[in-house]
Length: 214
Length: 115
Image 1 (cartoon, rainbow over the protein chains, first blue to last red):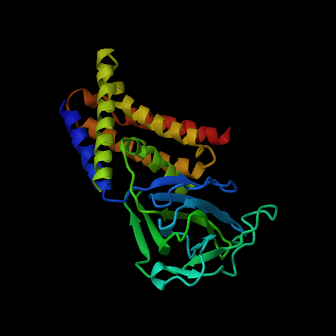
Image 2 (cartoon, rainbow over the protein chains, first blue to last red):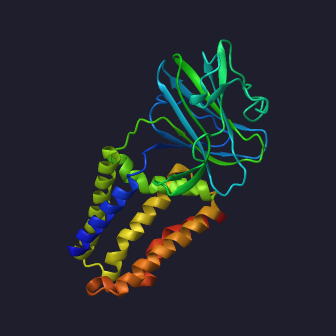
Image 3 (cartoon, one colour):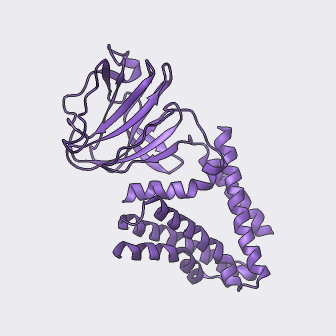
């Protein structure tokens, strides 16, 4: 019984240490496959993506409501040289120049690929009455240590805004240098973490490291 | 912050209890002590490797499997050496038993990379 007690105490100490970090629900993007829309972009999500070399982009659709917060931090695991993907938010009512404090600027970047992958796919342009905001270079600290998964990241951009109207928005993430690499998009800030998440945590940790070490 | 803390603390307890239950079941059915201590480690690694297959993360990532083999191998070795220095039945499970239990599922995953 003494061993059991010691094991329990050790596990609780480990749990307390890791819980200092924020809890994000993980999403693993499959290259070349469209991801279903994120229904609640205000909830905390950690989107793990891998851009292949070339003119490709990852698309992350979101169903948002007017006034819902849009928080995004684009992170790149360290050790990938100068890899720093660009992020564009496209959707309804994204018109006019947002304040610089939002971390966004109006308009589409000129180096964005015209299609997500193959030219047979729908082009990457905002529809009628839609607009696009691009993430600015980060103003805050360039490094970020994620304690849940023990990964050290470079911050490639950070945005804080409110969705202006109800509708379907889309995050476009691509590499202007066309070299590709791995990234994590930390979206939202409403934490949801229960017993099921805790029980699945060892598997989630392993999935994140397979994504990183692949 | 209390949500994640509570969730992980509860999760930790559940894993600790599962570990204890497997150990206890081993005692009831008279499993040899070396196996009694390492069976929960084998089941835990089977859960991870099996989960990675179910989610589709494996196969297709041989570099990641090799890194996991070195990581799990390192932990297994530490547990095995620590067990050697313990008194009682835990000492029956040495480094070889811990390594076999920890690495078994990962070696199967590595073999699947070539199939």
